[in-house]
Length: 332
Image (tube, rainbow, N blue to C red; front, side, top):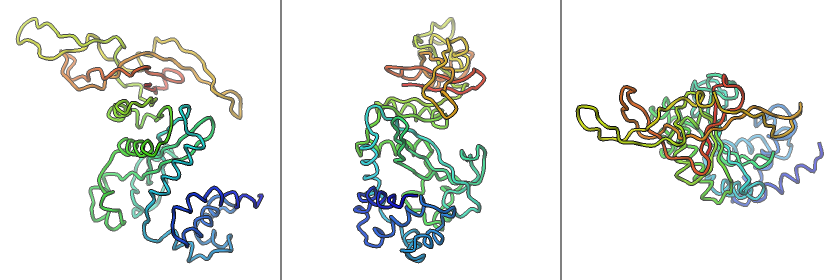
């Protein structure tokens, strides 16, 4: 490997080092980052210090294990650098999960939960991530640890692990994602659309919060997500007998997104070439209103969700692949 990469790394790290404001940290940071991305399979502190030769194990270990320090200045610079590199109206802000499989039960936030890296439930830590991407260039701009209720409901466990008091409350992953999106926007990060998988798309409050912020978004949903036709209207039902009706009801029934798309026209689209040829799939789009409004009893159908706000200017559901895939997307 060309040794000039270390000087390139130091130039890239220069804005971040200025924010550390600590001589030892300024020296240790390039050594630690170089150890993570350089040669060698073992990425623990001892072998990285041995390979570097210029720093000692105790120094590098202290850099990693010392008391918590304010990350806000570094995060601000990261957002500014990411925006400079790939930010703009054509950029995408991607919300996702990152799972770190772990053994034991003492690492903060570790618990049996779904591990995306393994595709199954496992003992792991889960982090909510934000990535800014344009073309084929992704830049990670946010990473926040998710604390399961098994942690937030146990103050003694939080204290033993050193979790700060203001970080010990329970927050869902969509709530964490929204806080990160707000932080990125407040720092001036530019993007044209928010993307998220069905883990976030199934949350009506998450979708609604994105719309309330005036953001364009596209999220995954399950095939069972109930939707209404785009021209659904709220009407006042006429009571045949008994008490007069007090609430408006939709003039059409909600059905699953899968059923809505069953008769839609499908097209095969290719978005770029991969290592084995063009990447392509079948797509269909239908304009709808999502059944994520307030719940209300509607006749003999029982409790039903009313139509939510229209997703303007584009409002629909989309699915890639065959109907049997049972996945989809809501667009705004």
